Amino acid sequence: METNVEIANSPLQPSIRKTRKLKMSNHWKKVGLGYLFLSPFLILFITFTVVPVIQSMWLSFTYYNMLQPARWIGLANYSVLFLEDDIFLKAIKNTVIFAVITGPVSYMLSFMLAWIIDTLKGRMLFSLAFYVPSITSGIALSVVWLYIFSGDRYGLLNHWLLNWGIISEPVLWVTNTKTILPVVMIVSLWMSMGTGFLVFLAGLQNVSKELYEAGAIDGIANKFQELWYITVPSMKPQLLFGAVNAIVASFGVFDIAVAMAGMPSPNYAAHTIISHLYDYAFIRFELGYASAIAVVLFLVTLGLGRMAMKLFSSNDE
Amino acid sequence: MTWSARKLFSRLNRALLYAFMIVLVGFTALPIVYMISTAFKPLDELFLYPPRFFVQKPTLRNFFDLLTATDSSIVPFTRYMFNSLFVSAAIVVGTLVICSLGAYVLSKFKLPGAGPLFAIIISALMFSPQVTQIPTYMVISGLGMLDTYWALILPKLAVAYNIFLMKQFIDQIPDPLLEAAHIDGASEWRVFWRIVMPVCKPAWATLIIFSFIGNWNDYFTPLVFTTSETMKTLPLALQTIAGGPGVVARSGALAAGTFLITLPPILIFIAFQKLVMNTMVYSGIKS
Image 1 (cartoon, chains in turn red, blue):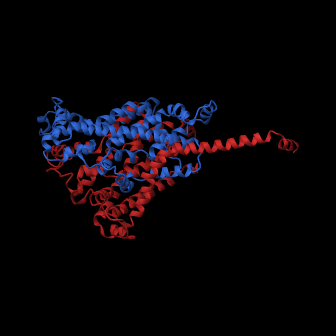
Image 2 (cartoon, chains in turn purple, blue):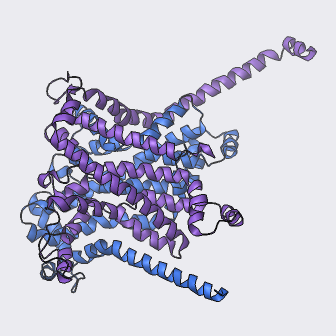
Image 3 (tube, chains in turn orange, brown):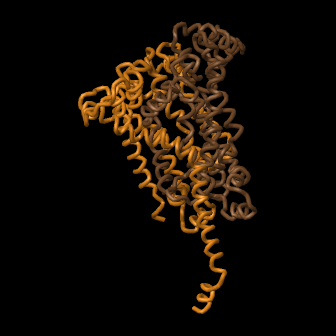
């Protein structure tokens, strides 16, 4: 008490207040500087990501063709989209089939391959071999795939299958509506050991060795139990990242489908949500309608991403 | 089973595993090997029946054809290469500086509003970039930037994944290291360039690679934003060569073009592979 009073009366007091003031202004200086450093990112991120998402939502309730001002039409775009636009329904069906198969398959495959490679000698070489397809240009490599799946007997696959007597006449792989989508899936799977795969590889290296030793003492009997009880739980952040990546990639399928099957593809057999979006936005310039497609895609991928986040949430540890 | 028999069994198992993996690698490498081999095939080998996988008499003629023959289509092939190289390089430099600076602030400044902003960035990882294409197109066209380099570069700088990756890495830098520098009187700007950036070398090596490769191969953005032949990048140009009339005559040039567009990403990745693998650990999302 006494010392307090003394200090309050002492001539030191103003200088204490001054340093406090200085500290406060230092704090605000740092905040200002922080926002200054952040501003290039913030401005570009808001202009090209945040505002566009909101604007897409607004546009999806309008009729807009860039020439006349947008006209509010309520839910009309959505009702046409889901009730009348057969091609969109086909695009949704194709995209969902594609995503439901290639998403999980590429995800599991990436993880299993990373898991096996992690135990092998020559990790770097093996991982390079599986990763390289994902960094090639889908458009460029489609030239090779189109040759492999070529519909005449010059096509490599047809040539081999004919030679082995599995088929008696050439299959029109990329023009037959039944085989287009599977072909697109195969090419996409081939290209899908990408960022997720690398993240898994790195994560596997970082699982602490002590956990495995402790597990052995606790009676973990084989490699698969070890995988399930130790590896998977300690890799949740990486697994989540991989899942988000796989979801976005599998619903964003476009360029491989265009490169393999053309645009529009025969009988729309390889038409995807993005193909439909591109068609209406940048060929027909019906931007309101195209925005409704974008919003559907946004909600689906974000919803699945959130679900993945719940599934892999590391709070329960 | 005796101990040595068990050992033999497990050895056999491993040998089988290696064999299986090598076959798998062979299978995934098939299209790439074929692509490389085709780029060097002389014309008569390109149309051989039955098709032959490997080149017999390698030649560089396809590359000369590519560089000279596409001259007739007004724009020389080198122009597409320059466009791709320039756009990818500009994006890489820009995004590296912008996202690293932003990540440093988000990680170490404890700004009011940083938490919600980071949550939005995480959400932005979760949807396809094509979702924002229409309003982005409107902004670019409103600014009069359609069919310019700006249209291809500007929307690609503030990428959620890049700032996320840099922040995860900068989070690992111990605060005392930065405080020591501050006490020595270094400004934030100096601390960022002299301490944060050198420590983050593996992270920005990763960012450079992903950003370069992603934009080098990007097909959708130039498809939407460019209209003239002189602004096209390699993937579009390649598709023009592949799809136009007289495909047969140009299939040698096409094979060479495919080779040229595929090579840089692979070489860059090989050069930085070790650094990348070390960074990827921090790419996990903690929820």
